[in-house]
Length: 208
Length: 380
Image (cartoon, rainbow over all chains, first blue to last red; front, side, top):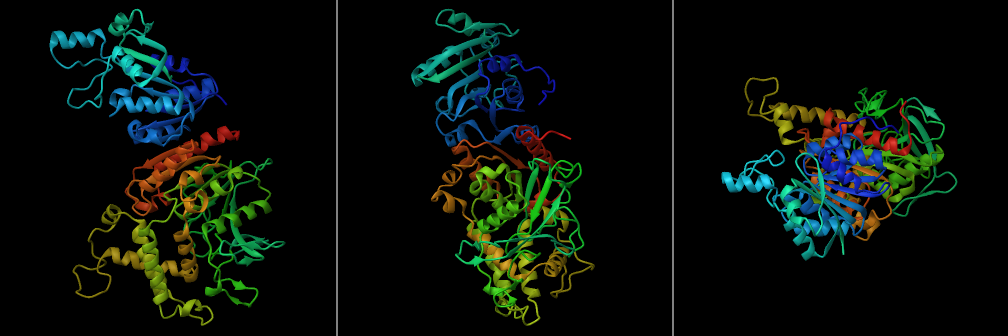
């Protein structure tokens, strides 16, 4: 089996991949074109599956030999049994779900651990945009207009941590990723700066 | 044993009779089949192709009866999606069929006459268990892949559930885990058309040397409509007239679509047995995977499956709709089975799986390639 050199993974996906143990069973919810799954398959020999909303994404994934189904995080996670996977991954999709809290609960139910990444709405440029320009923020990562965005449930890193607490979800690891790819551990101390400087956040969760 | 007309043939149930679901025991039943490509030394490269209602074992080469290319010649061949340079493809004619396998038009050894309606009722499971015996004879313990569309897809599901250790990858295409009321209804109209034909003779037409051509042709015409989509019919024919400038105010085939259906009906009767049509449609109607294997719960039926699945549906297929495929996928997810599911955008209706659909081929070929990799089948 040879791994053909592919374009490098987005840094956020690399950070997610780092959290995944080799040889584990992985469900990637919102797997897009399958870049992460493909990487995990070959680099970490995982038993990987994916769910993707767009049929173009699904067909691209299946065409490249990945096990992916067409479906969405809000509707299709209920089908899976408890603890069916070692990791349930949700990358850059939480903010586009209808019921993020239910999706989160499902992820920590289906996976022994869940890995979540999302754009941080507490990021200083977003705050500044609202404060000084007075318009809904548009950044490179969030390029939609307010009226046509699929992202309907934004949150900040602090919001997310509060939600996890209230759902009884334990945060094992949290990383804030800034615009130029520098990372910062999200701990109880330094939260203010993580929430301010992090453009994206990545969390490793489990049901407590 | 090889005969020119029907390809290869195996005799099953020689030592112990084959017991059908209905309880009847059949001895020495004939299982006709075709193969393409070469079985490798380890016997690990076998792909079983299961045909649909009106199909037969001639999936990849010219059909000796119709003279037309095999029904899946677009997919089977050197360098094609089902690459005969790499895989050994087996396509059996189903039990109850009319291309050499034991069925109603064959001679009943006990009476020396054609079975006709004396032929016992058959099920999808019967067909699959007969295929398993064929594989025993070919000494193939495990299939790399089982694949089929429509009724072929039902056999694929049955295979994966009944023989979990003998299937590595399963591809049910444009199919369902049970026949819907609408599908049963369409079949019933087709059967009634056959049985209403005066030449059907209560199934004994072969004895009387006649044939229920009209009835079978009508059954085929009805079925053919269900295989196409409204847009496909519209694009192909619209309201265009057939070889005439004006409507005739009569009942000749004024419209092209009428002429086309009549042609489909008339060519079908040349190659298909009317009683086979009755028995096979019945087997499809009776198919209910959840009921048979899961106490009514489909996920329970899938509890022991080991195969990697690739479920495929087509957007314009209204006979076996995407919703039916989703039911299968949901149940497979419920037992955390390894499943891929792709809905292919097509306006060709149910028949899309037989036609040129590059997106479908890409998905299928990617899945098979990925599965071959996991199964340790190295590329040539």
